[in-house]
Image: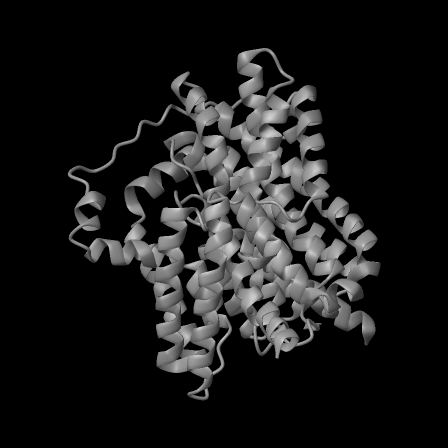
Length: 462
């Protein structure tokens, strides 16, 4: 009976991981898609539909790994970032594109991401296990840890001190909205997550309606792209990533991924920039430096995302990282399925429902599924896929799909009030992110500060 249950759990996890890999392989091809906007709502939906914990976990992780491989396609071939973490790769990728070898840039990036993903899972799990004995202490200190983490992440964001100061009014807005909805018998949590996640999208939609911003966003001609012909230098469908990268590139990618796998409080973009600079400073030959830095940086995007999910999830059960508080938030808090108790900091989420070995096993399963789907697709069909997306895929249709999903979830949780909270948080958060660099990771930490730290402060002073 136990073996049958385990087999059923593995099959569900494999099926959901395969679904996540396929869906986000496709989404990664679409330029400019934000990780939080695309990863969080589907993961939340999967959790609320009652999918077993292992299935929810593999769906998210396989999706994140797959997306961070195919985001290299628009970045390398079209010269526009596939998502937020691809922005630091854009300059070097454009240089190689101008040299006429965008396919080389693409293959280095994708291969670096694949190698780093396989290394990051066991390293992140090992580091999480070392921190796990301190989990109870950290859980009891959750209100003060979240406040400290919020300030730290705000300072490390693009806004620096502006983001730190903005935390105060932002938190007060959330507290006020909570009091307003509670006075009408409506308790919301998911709506705040979704509002923050789609902030840039909401801000853009409102800007289009503005006579000031609208004309600035309007374009008088269709954007054009130049795609170089594809050149295949291997036989078979699944190229060996260790042959795509030379020995030096492999070593630097593994080293950068190892460092990233042990960190979980820094911005993924910041880690990508810092580790790329560290690698680039040690290679003299210009062309070799460009290709090596691209491989290492894309490896860092994979490793950082994996570590920032696994370490807080395994060790604490609390979303104490920018990724955990943003794209991976539904793994921690998806009421009524998964919860973080705002009064005590106690949890009931994947941290409590899966063991260390399960995180390792299902994490490796997710990476394998993403590798089987995303890696050969990006290596063999990148040019045709980029051509199809740039010509045929309507960004308006993609936006409408996510808007529809978000409306359904918000009305399910809080009817009209849920929708109004999403619009309010989205507009406020989107404008703050655009103007002050107060990004979604900081905003998610601000939300936890509002629900955990503010009540604790009120108890101290009343």
